[in-house]
Length: 287
Image 1 (spheres, rainbow, N blue to C red):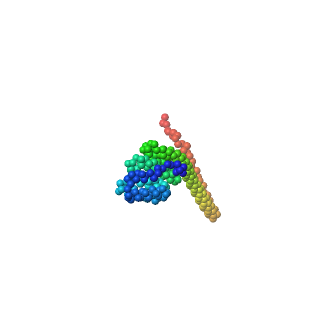
Image 2 (tube, rainbow, N blue to C red; image 1 turned 120 degrees about the vertical axis):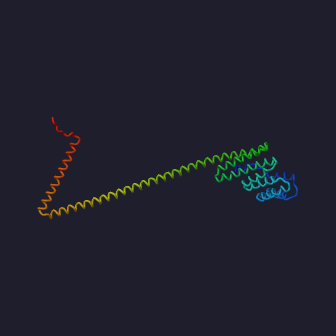
Image 3 (cartoon, helix red, strand yellow; image 1 turned 90 degrees about the vertical axis):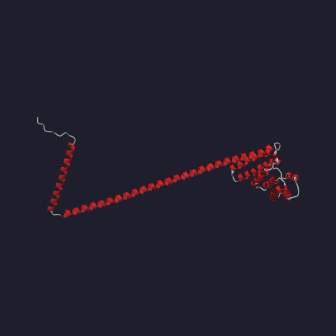
């Protein structure tokens, strides 16, 4: 942008006094215009802009074209580094019916738009900056249409094209970096989710292992309790057997034998029924 600032051609405010001089007469507008031109020449652009604004406000009452003062105010604002305010002021200057002034205004408004593009570039708003350059080129084209022999808008049009190309390269780099950062964030989130899922799986597995350990422990305790109960039962039986008389022991032994015999007979009957299942039963024949 520094190259453009040194290279851009701007239409001077000094020539505007000629337009005022055509209808010059004593009055507030003329006095303010004179002060503004002097301050502009001295480099006091903020003070010049203030006086040009006063001249534009008073011009209609004195039958002067306010667009002339608006044009000079735009120049002073642009010199002050207020490109956005300058662009808006040039819009007011374009209301004139003077084609020569329109051509100069379109030209300088193009410069203001490039100034805005430079500010947007500094903030890395490259898309907005490209749009501002496109509008600047449109201003230069209109200036060339009104003044085909004027070389200044042609020069600035070419310079703006160089700026646009540079901005496109910067935008491409920015987008590539954004895509890179986005992919990095996505991978980071994905790894985070994967780690979270793995942690949950590990947690579930640990819980299952703990549950199984608790179950095994309970089973072992139950087995111990059952074994203890069985041992205690045997001890009680043995104790009772030791306390029995020979007659009671014999009776108990006979009862156990009878019980075992009944169970064998029962099992034999079940086996016999299963063996004969599905077989034809013999029938008596009377012949």
